[in-house]
Image (tube, rainbow, N blue to C red; front, side):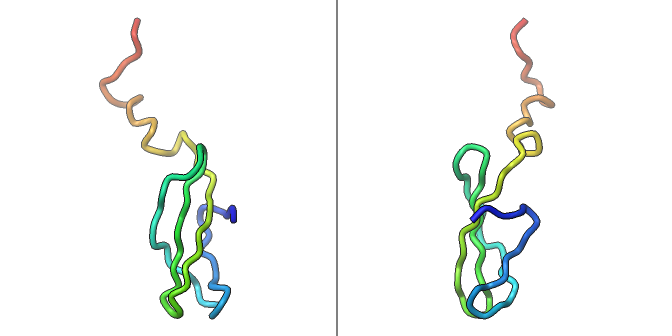
Length: 69
């Protein structure tokens, strides 16, 4: 399942909104988010596309590390 990054899915069993339980790295350019239903306990795994320019991976650009001259 590939979903929008702001989307919290509805539980397919009880139709309540699921809560974000865990975020894990996925394949390059994606992260995997595990959602859990607090009503019935069902879990769902969703893949989200990640913008590499909005992650902490570019933190070195603002730090003291500089490319060689």
